[in-house]
Amino acid sequence: MSTAASLHRSRKRKNAVMMALCTIAAGIGLVWLALILGALLYKGLSGLSLSGFTQMTPPPGDAGGLLNAIYGSIVMTVIGIVVGTPIGVLAGTYMAEYGRFSRLTTVVRFINDILLSAPSIIVGLFVYELMVRPMGHFSAIAGAVALSILVIPVVVRTTEDMLNLVPNALREAGTAIGAPRWVVIRSVAYRAALSGIVTGIL
Image (tube, rainbow, N blue to C red):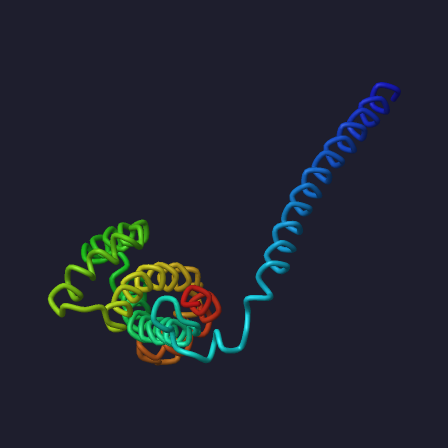
């Protein structure tokens, strides 16, 4: 008993020491974070104004805002999501529900994994060569296409993974009552996997 008690006390001491070290390390990190945020707020608040969000970007050297940049970012993001989400959801649905073991699914999954790991700068250069150079100027459409290419692989993977997590018993129950396969997917599989798919889209 004395040996067990001594081991217990030793473990408690070691645990207390490690907990103290971790707390000190976390505290040091929080202190530096607070200092950085404080410096940003102290030096940056004076430069913020409503005109920075309501006025267009002026020529160099003049005062103005960032309204066109904010508007352009919103437009490109919305178009990219609107274009990329349906393609990604439909592709992920096919891979999980219709062609789970087909060769096409294997090829699409391989290409999708490559796109998932592709740096965004590579996608941007691809769209630049594909659209910007032939048109002769930058455009929101080109940016939206680049964003949709980045969105599609994420949505495909998330949709496939979430649908694969849906128990087959739910699908079999829907089939047993005579529901067509597309109805089972829409009313059973999608509902069960909705939260995960939405998380992937966001």
